[in-house]
Image 1 (tube, helix red, strand yellow):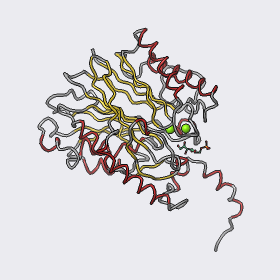
Image 2: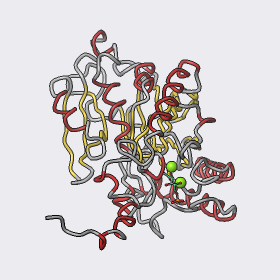
Image 3: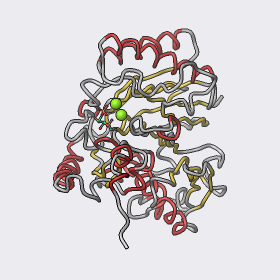
Image 4: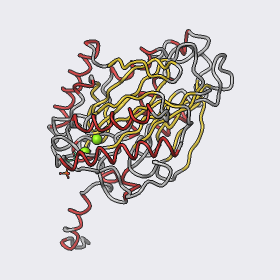
Length: 371
Ligand code: F6R
Ligand code: MG
Ligand code: MG
């Protein structure tokens, strides 16, 4: 029997503003998932928070895109929204863009990363949760885990990793996808995923020649929902999540975490309109404060055991990442000094999906022709 792990998240109310999740929402989440566990629908669960996003991590045997599991998540988000409304939390129900659940949660507002796989003898899994940024923020770290020998020593010295990996990349503007294999297609892959607001890594697979793993079971998956495309107007950033398996022919746990030692620039932050450094933090520090940020990433580590989620270990709650956090704070300071100027503020084509066009519209009549 294969195991499925589903990480489904939504902002159903911030506390205060867009900073964090109120404990009562976490309690509502736990209550709903505990009931589902007792009824046998899911095997195990963990409710977590990253910034203002409520995170439901569930393990089960229903496969991906199960209407029962998606329906459960939707019901739990609705219950949490009720709690948020009572407390008048900020933007209560924000990410639930539809009034009724219709079988699949994709395209309805919440972000989702899920994968089904055959459990190995030991199955380490990391749930990454980001706030105040977009799915393309995972491009650089996922690329580095599975394709960069300067990050992942195993690509060079472990025969089980040496053959490389297969990337599934989505063009989220044109709703199409392409599969590419590394190391042969490294340059073409980078040509796409460097444009992170359009091309996003959706999944990574072992290649056909992998000595230990089946080529059709993903080893990493990223949520790729774009809220603005769903809602048709700006309703907040689509803060992404990802699941990554590690060890035994895959990048080691430390190779999976290593890319986050570099606080790369991502877009999001204040009003979803600014570039800023991605700061890795422990779950207790996943609160977005300065200028509604800076963007954060948390990592919860588990061993999966017969569909149980043994953990979590709060992987970035570690002095080894102190220097990264300090660097991120310095970069945040530097970027902030640009105020409303690019490249702190996003380029015009990305601002199209924010509230800026409404402001510019008011100026339209004032322009006159220059000969
Ligand atoms: C970014 C985010 C916040 C809000 C900002 C303004 O993803 O959620 O930075 O954009 O706090 O929020 P409103 O317009 O709700 O006052
Ligand atoms: Mg919010
Ligand atoms: Mg958020």
